Length: 79
Image (cartoon, rainbow, N blue to C red):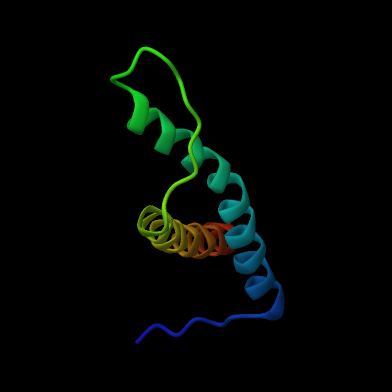
């Protein structure tokens, strides 16, 4: 059985990677949301997602942010 030897620096790397991913992708997801919502219209609008859409966006972002953090840790460790 493989056991991870996680140090404080490694946890810090995962957390920082997670937070950066959330911050950067929040803006990207807002743009994608609006492109998808208004792609079949001639004019462009910028709307804020409703509560149901925010929940979906945040859940997906958290999943991929965790994946980003752990992959960053793994590939940084493999050197």
